[in-house]
Amino acid sequence: QQQVKQSPQSLIVQKGGISIINCAYENTAFDYFPWYQQFPGKGPALLIAIRPDVSEKKEGRFTISFNKSAKQFSLHIMDSQPGDSATYFCAASPGNQGGKLIFGQGTELSVKP
Amino acid sequence: GAGVSQSPSNKVTEKGKDVELRCDPISGHTALYWYRQSLGQGLEFLIYFQGNSAPDKSGLPSDRFSAERTGGSVSTLTIQRTQQEDSAVYLCASSHPSPGRRETQYFGPGTRLLVL
Image (cartoon, each protein chain N blue to C red):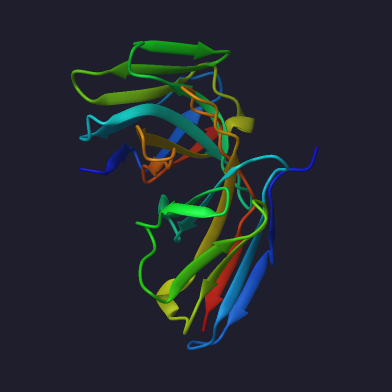
């Protein structure tokens, strides 16, 4: 019940295209859903986050879509750029447990010029 | 300002040896987390500190793993009698929780542990 399932495992997109990464969860106690971006040799960095009371959040080229009834959320990267090539992790955090994050397995994104 | 720092950046050890991994959180951050990232896998929660207390140790995989935090700042993760399956990147994160809000966790670069 604590799992977060992420797909696809890897993704290749042409420059200017849309990258879409999907995540699903079971635990209805999750109340915070961040996405992290990780470059090789670096720690993950927060990209964008959403709470379940909204269905969409947009920051620049990055958008989270959230479907509470389906227990699914996704990251859309518009106008993908080679600099976006990284590993992306979705995560979920259960309320009242100190803020620990349960991560998906990660998606390795490669944007081809 | 300084971010989360971890040391050593790389550690190679022999099976059966003990290792200590250090985390220096961002100054003023009261919450500190340890995660483990195995090759090609997502991050796995290990332990959470609020101040010097660890209210959630549920992710520690065995009693060979322990962690402490002193002065509400530096934390040390200790692995005793290391095994090859302990090989992973150990990541530390810190945040400054606010009531009713979820604050960003800032991650360090990690310690890459290889057990031979």
